Length: 228
Image 1 (spheres, rainbow, N blue to C red):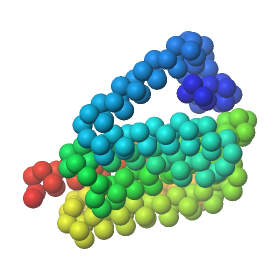
Image 2 (cartoon, rainbow, N blue to C red):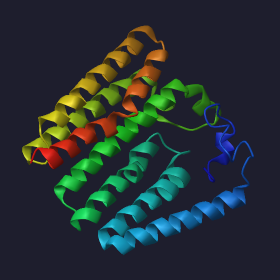
Image 3 (cartoon, rainbow, N blue to C red):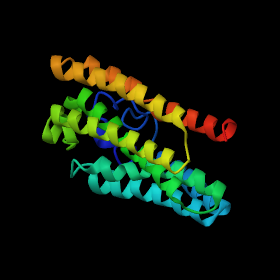
């Protein structure tokens, strides 16, 4: 938010954040967030090397790759930025097992794919904000309908990854069934948007999508804890 405070001030969705609304001095925000970041990275390396590398990579992709290098330059910004969002779950798993394996990579990929849909739906609903701030999010560049079609593809990819986790015996049917139910509901709202151009359906899809990851990870936890 320190680096985005100028464009946040131009967008209705973000203009009340502490920095663009001038409730918090930029220098104070930078110093405090830097201290918290350094502390978090230090603690992650204290846990183990792989955890430390995961959290450091998340920081690098969030600040330097997504926010500074790509956000204002390319519609692929969130595709690379989603790597940052995937690092906490990778760091959490390697903190427990001590190394990176295929299960950790697949779980991380679910978060990455979800992150792209999450941001694209926000961008569709608030597309005028992104146009005013001259941020080339995917709906601004290729159009809202094409972005929805790509979102359908990404929803499908999430379920494919979950199916692969089933094949390698990392999860069971409960996670997949839960994911499929949410996928159908989200898809219905997006189809209604395509047929009506009513953006309230995008907002509804976004509202369902927001807790989606937590809700499909909860059955995964239940399966691995109580259904060995």
